Image 1 (cartoon, rainbow, N blue to C red):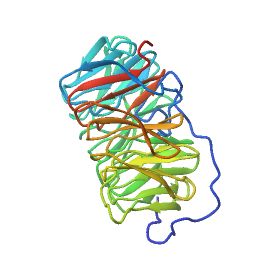
Image 2 (cartoon, rainbow, N blue to C red):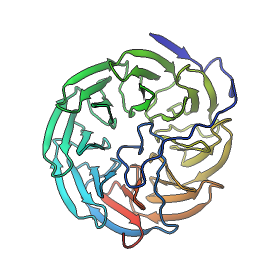
Image 3 (cartoon, rainbow, N blue to C red):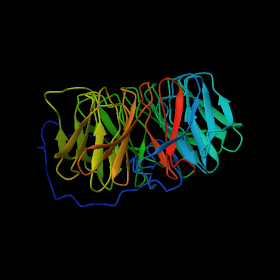
Image 4 (cartoon, helix red, strand yellow):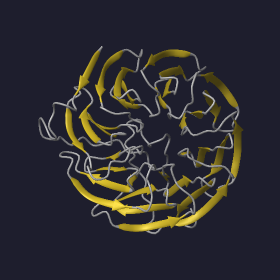
Length: 375
């Protein structure tokens, strides 16, 4: 077991030059988990209209902070009314809803016809995507806000009971669990055959997917609630400190570190990362685009309220919500606002983008879909 600390000893930019590794983007027609890919890159494979129109909206009455999944023309999203909803992407028709016993703020993951998600009671659910019938449940000892990673017959997620769990997708039986020293709010990412997960114990943990063996942990110097975005051997994440950090997840060495000394507000939004850009928002009301190699800030966009909504890169734009009630689209090239929609309530959920559509919920309990007027 190795602990690697880089905050105190490594300069802002170190080591060999950045080698661009093409990131994984979500398929054009689906957004199957929290950030669209197992690497949590937040990069959409789908193009969206230059001026998205409101296609439909559905009012479920209670806050929606869960990020939607979109698979096979169906939107899956949880709400504080204890329900997971399946909605038709084309018109918002409710196909079915599944009742848990507490609020659903974990973002669902959909794989091989099954929807996986956790709830605030600490119960993890597997539900048939076709009809909402329960397949199995697993009870953790703390709240589940961490969104699941599904790969190779395993589903991995964190809990406020300080554990990272790995269950069998077939029956929910425990394959392994790893105990950290603090709550696990963030969602796990996949890199090679390793699970990479940030914790409230101030570490990023690198675990073997096969058996949960702890490879090493990397000191962040702060509680981390955001999820890391992985591009090749690089990981990008924001912290409560607040820092934005780029590091080599294999060696633990820091590549760069950013902190705005004049505006020290926590970062809970997860980064969107491609070979050309790292985009991240924070509670200082700002979204910044960083050069992945150097950490240089290319532009800063200022909203009217804090940003907990994780941005999504779609083509030459990035989309994100804000507590000011707006869903924004901003040019990647210069950070200029090119579109926005006022929903009238804070947006802390992150957009999901697939099949030319953008889906996001707000804290008034309204789920919105934008795209071409007629799909």
